[in-house]
Amino acid sequence: ERAKSNINSFKIKKKDIIIISTPLHHTLAIRLMTIGIILESKIIFMENYNFHNFLKLIKTFKCNFTFFISNQLIEILKNRIKPYVLKSLRCLVSSSASLPIDKKSQLIKIFSKNIYEMYGLSEAAVVSILKINSQKTNLSSVGKPIRNVKLKINYFKNERVGEIEVKSKYIFLGYYIRNRLKRINRKSFFKTGDIGYIKNGFLYFSGRKKNFVKINGISIYLDDIHNLLTQKKIVDDCVLTYIEDNKNINPRICLVFQSNKHNVNYIRNFCFKNLSTYQIPTYFFKLNKIPRNKMKKLNMVEIQKIITKKLAFN
Image (cartoon, rainbow, N blue to C red; front, side):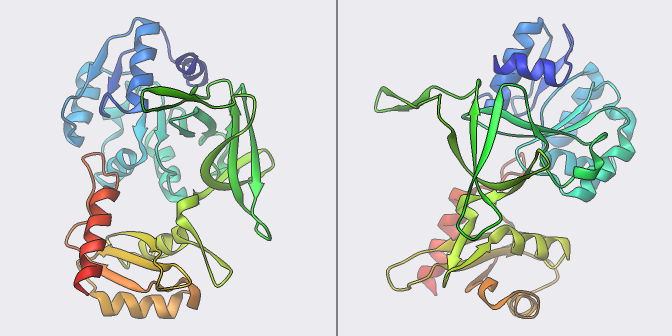
């Protein structure tokens, strides 16, 4: 059912050639494999991902469809890949993380066919789709819910945002814990752990609930700090998290960053000048390279290990 909803949403045709670049345990890979089986497609699977090999395979085999991780599309723009490399693709579908608005606008210029951004999660598959070409006035959103999906927002007290909740035909059965299936109630709304709001029928994604923290009763969105530092190009890469311990009443914000131009003191001074007092991180750690996997996704396990070591050392 999940696969069929994608076939209808993205107008994938029978025997389209499909390429899979994510590991096979990834839900996107499982769905692409299922789509390929249903449509009797040729399936190209990359056992070891490499960005340039990925593009070469698309061009060589004239692949028609895949799910792109948003970072892959950003890499395409960064490397100024020529449009003819992608011309066999039926459409571009961005997933995993929201694309910045400027990147969406740039993609429209190099790819003349349909471009989509989809919001979803492993437990519920695709939740909403933004048609980037035709819904340009709503580029900061992640689109409208697809057929057979209902959304609601459990708004936080005195906040314009809240937790996104989903009721869907495509919701999972439950969690497999200690060799037993712990079923969820599929008739009720599923709490996603994501934060957002709905305006004019469009869903706006604000970040993960774990990236939302209150200090002295003030709501802080760590993604706002991240966006400021990256959009102003103060850092080459960064990740923000917060630390809770029994010694402090409030959580402490921690910034781990990568920069070839600036040191900790420069970044700290920038934060003092450009952030509200309650947004300023307590801890600043500079790394030569932020741990990411081959798909450019953050390796949070490794990042947490680094933070723990640095805090112990300090």
